[in-house]
Amino acid sequence: MALRVTSNMMSNQVLRNLNRNLNKMSEQQNQLSTGRKINKPSDDPVGVTYALRYRSELSANDQYSRNVDTALGWLDTTDSVMSQAEDVMNRLKELAVQASTGTNPQSALDSISSEFQELKKQLSDLGNTQINGKFIFNGQTYNIEPYDSNDPASAETDSGAVEYTVGQGVTFQINTSGNDFFGEKNGTDNVFSIIDRMVTAMSTSSFPDIAKEVENIDNRMNKMVSVHSETGARTNRVELMQTRLENENLGLTELQSKTEDADIAELMIKSNVSSNIYQASLSAGAKIITPTLVDFLK
Image (cartoon, rainbow, N blue to C red; front, side):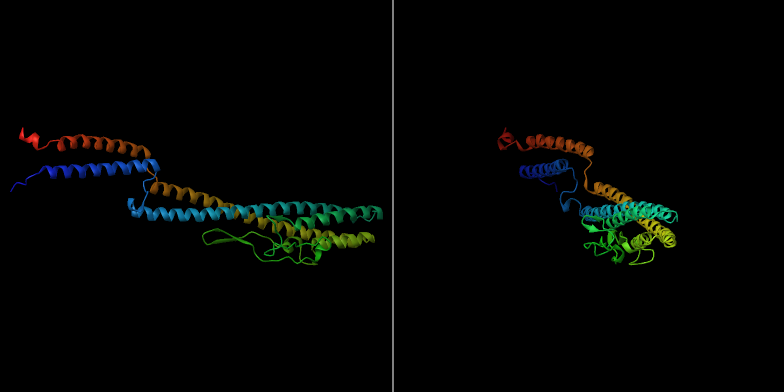
């Protein structure tokens, strides 16, 4: 049996089609204005899940990157201080060799002793180096100055590790104990103890004792270089983590863009097509809805 199509049915169908076309055009224009193809969860429930995951990972990586920057700042400062301390040690050795010559008069030894005292102060200042208000050679007690300028040889620096989380499950130690670098408290090769013994020996023109300390200076310098190399290795490791985080951020940003961002060029074409379709629907609908009972009676 043939279905009788009424004017009311035609009008309702036209309105439904107009609303569908209008909604589609509105959605596309909204995407164009925001530049995003996901503006609410219902736009793409699966895509929203991935987008939230990417955002979470990017946020975590951003914090890791800040930690890496802070760690590199600490390590670069440590590296610079160690280089300066090694320069001082080279000068100490040069003076020690000069002082060990038995032909030096007491006046010359006194002059060398004065320079030793100044170099001792310089090393003490280097041992009390701070970054962002933290003493880099005093472990976890970085709020306490490790070296007393009056008696730095008796300093007992904290050996606790200062660690930064530089990646998911990756925690890294960035500090070096002052005792590892400058020597153990009152140790034979503690650089401050060496200087004190040298000054005492020069005050009495004890040339054998002065010559004996040259070997201790060499031993301490070798240990300093070894500790310095460890700091360099840590710096390289953190820099590798920095590169890794940058690559991860780039990859996650690309994935997030593919998931959330709209293809503007393609969307503009589709929006123009939808607009034309809607305009055509309005034109066709006007012709269908316009006729009335009077038009049929004619």
